[in-house]
Image 1 (cartoon, rainbow, N blue to C red):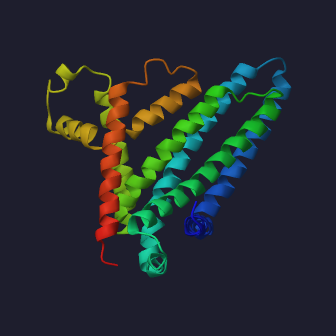
Image 2 (cartoon, rainbow, N blue to C red):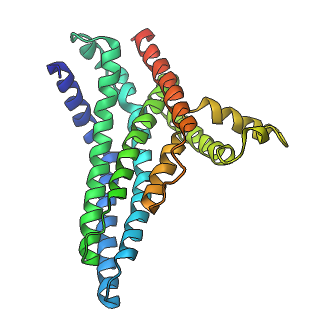
Image 3 (cartoon, rainbow, N blue to C red):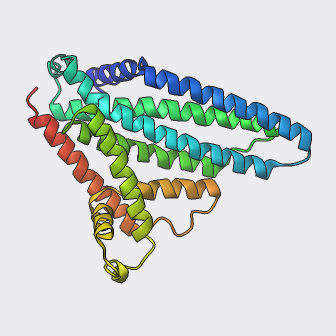
Length: 268
């Protein structure tokens, strides 16, 4: 890796790690996990016996909560990764390096992704260790690890989507659009992914038409979330559908291309 790439990735992480939002969420998550460990320790002591299955289920629920929190963090930092450079005029310093705007775009996003993953991995590891101690048995399973890997990709796509919105509107608007669009697309995925194609246009209403548009024109990141959740539940059969995977790759690539195009054309 080029020295300037490493420098920018480290700078991105150091810039965001000082964020009050990240510090608050980091502390709140740590306190919540520790309190959960203390409660489970007391329950385990009182119940006695082998309750490892309950431990696995409890850890899985905890991971699902962490997944939602990580989505929020990815959206927040994805929105601010470029806007803070524009507002503080740091962009001119970065573009003075021997790198293209495309390289700047991807390196900045990757640095932000690494930071979000650092929080995500910390939460996973802390939860796994403390919950295993509470239940007096290792309750972290291979499916938990696979779920972690799937959500890593999910968070990267969320960051790309947030950066795209941030290049077209102000920070609050971009964050709002990231949340609303993601939730609407999730509702559309839930509605249309489980029904045959020949039933898509039956009983068509205005709301259903909007959902169908989101289903086809927005990356189906909910598909990754469903895969991750199914892995946590220990049942991922029938979820990895080639059509969903292909759509996710193609539409995500389009969003990334547009975001990169805006960075290259933007008049700083």
